[in-house]
Image 1: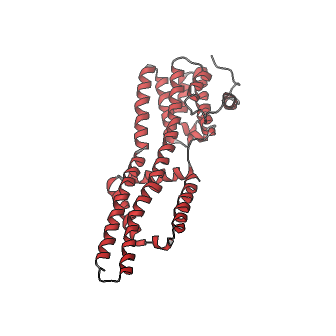
Image 2: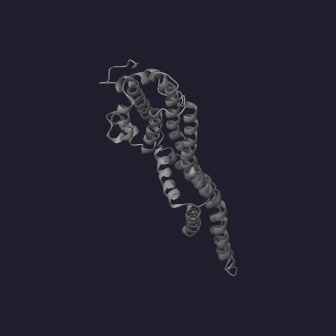
Image 3: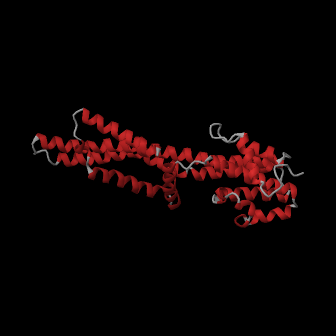
Length: 294
């Protein structure tokens, strides 16, 4: 919604201002120039990136358009799942809890939090580190270092499409100049024409430079920035899990551990402590209330 609104304001002000200046909007419509610029940009993008990055860029654009940042409900779902798993680990033998980790899709605990379960990468991340806790051979500081390395890898992969689009964004003005030069070459071939014809051809050529700059700074660059914002917000879920599990490994009660995780959420998006307690109470329905297991 914000992307559509922003583009409407940009195009409205640009075209409106051009008309007020006495220009004719039809002059800007030069399909050949747009084909040259966008075609060259698309081809360059394909040359410079792997199929996986190209596919992920499409996914990232959809996420940016939908503003697919984690919602308050998703944050609460992750906190609720972590709390439930920690209570299980406190109340039951580790081998009984291991079945939830090995087959999360069949786990009644994970089934209560479908918002988490549908995020396969995050689910795997949670299961991997609870598995290490159950194994009991790694120290919390070692686990923290391992988590940091994995989160950094996840971040690197998540932002590949952002960097790819930024590169293309930076290339658009130059590709606009290419289109403009081709238009000038066409104009030079018509030097024997009347001045009004020659002027029209040169004006058409200049649309290439205008379009390249517009596509770069008013379209591709903002969308790339939005992808980065959305992906960084999605990575907050991993940091939440990291802090909660580390606090639990260091001996904190489940309620305290998930509070460590809650603090990793941005202040203006963070569920209140009352919301979290109500959510944890709901997570314990059928599981003995809100009291900590010894």
